[in-house]
Amino acid sequence: MEQKKILIITYYWPPAGGPGVQRWLKFAKYLPEFGWKPIIYTPENPSYPLLDESLMKDVPEDLEIVRTKIWEPYQLAEKLNKSNKKFKAGQFDVGSNQSWKSKLSIWVRGNFFIPDARVFWVNPSTQFLEQYLKINNIETIVTSGPPHSMHMIGLNLKKKFPDLKWIADFRDPWTEISYYKHLKLTKNSDKKHRQLESEVFKTADITLATSYTDAENFRKNGANAFCITNGFDETDSNPQTLQPSNSPTQFTLSYIGVLEQLRNPENLWKALDNLVKTNSDLAKNFNLKFVGRIDDKILEVIERSSLKNHIQNLGYVSHDKAVDEMAKSSLLLITNFPNDSSKGIIPGKIFEYLATGKQIISFGPNEADVAKILDETKAGKHFGYNDSKEIEDFILEKFELWKNGNLLENTQNIEQFSRKNLTKKLVEIL
Image (tube, rainbow, N blue to C red; front, side):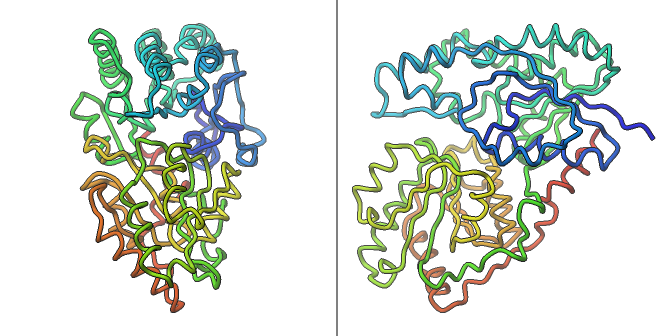
């Protein structure tokens, strides 16, 4: 039986690093098992914030990949201000950390490039794909954003081909993402962002969200929305063969990934600082490990505290190495934006955390989707950014279990989050 073709329009693709690339990389890996032939459309010369060559091994050898050139203004922005490199990953200096150059750059980014700085790829891609879809008899496309310019390509193609089936995949929300309010938008720019978002919701045949709350919000705004979370790939690591969390040498709390100012758990650093000062046993055994890119301003604050001599900062590593570091940890840290509008964000790394069987300490808004997942899987505890004493109690409880060799790995119901099962769910929706 001939496989159905599905064209996936995505900015992020290996060798890009980070969680954004992995969602459709994994779908493309498993879709052929369910009767679908994926074809990838991606830029030839993108400006990626992170690179990870190890993800290339997941690209099927026979996968068709179509590339065209893109022009992006980030090189110009970085000449204006080196901190503009953060914009590629949706990061910003905030509050007193903002220089006038940062403020100017953020204003330009939000008001001149709508929906984002990859907008210059929209029209050339529309023209190219208009012919490509005809020649290759493709009836189904996916656009994956952010960058939400990818959805503009889908919107244009849907207008040209009304019978085309279009799936708009939102790995993160558009106007409801936490940094949206930091873009310093004019009223006209804000109106344009919201009009474009609404048009995508109402025109796409299917809108995918990565969280339960986002799917519900999208439906309220006119989208035919479904939730397919991110997940873990069994072939990345075998939970049964991971190293035990009861390391004989150190009680290690690890953060894996990018940590920016908007998701900085200051109350956790204060709790850890107090514990190290008042509990000599924990101080002797404690290790705070960062695996990935941590904002310099956050690191400076931590290094001025009693935690200075307990920090291990590995910087950005390959995905394979990151999974290994998860396995070597005693506790795993995950953070989200503090505002209520972000309670639907489920950081992709939580699923790989779950696959290790380690306990997780999470920070974000109350009643977050992450908290629901942790409760359902018995994998850890979620805290708000105003909690304090409860954090110390939780860490001390886990430390005592570790010290006595009883910090057992105990997660439940995680099979639903495997990449293969999620691909099956995607196919059912299609």
